[in-house]
Length: 291
Image (cartoon, rainbow, N blue to C red; front, side):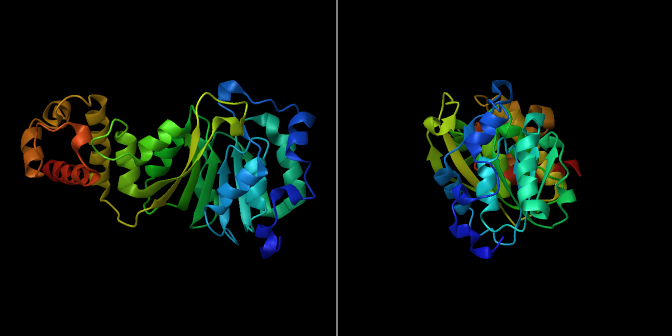
């Protein structure tokens, strides 16, 4: 594919069958149980891909391509290689059409994306795109944020979430949406909401709006023990978010109040009052006390 391909709309691709015809041809009605909602507007899928910057000669992974609407926009962007991971075997014929058209530039795996080994891509840096099912979106994000090696194999995540989940990812302290997902995401990445996408843009139409979130990994690497402690603290703290941290974090250490004070924090604070930096400080002291 020439590098000038980005200027082409995916609707101009002459090889694969048009996306709506693919859905009708292979009877690919969205599966509610799997949380499938198709985004079929070519202008919108192209806009999503453009938001990630140039993909010329990049290696890209897409999780949950479905019938392939976002997939086609990625393929028209000049990528060097696109690998898609799809759980639903019904989409194999549609993916085979793309494989015949793009050959070695495109490949797919039929499997659970949560079990995919990103090392098999064979590149040190990849970008990940996904229109994530509402019922599994946070699982995928937490997995990508808690990879054992950091900085991670991914250089950018461009992900569609239920709008409420997107707001939790970027939420600030002292807000109702600030929680464990906010802390994990903001400790390890720069996260921002790129755009809100109305429910009417999807087929079938979901009950809520969606939002596009981009995350870029921070270069700062926390010691493994500190990162592990931060995951424990955020989990316990936000499980009982209305309790003071001296109470909710008690299972972590009998000296937890001293550890909190040593971190420069007040034991009477509640978890939503702690900044991401506060969580890191507290995790550092807790890890040190255990060493």
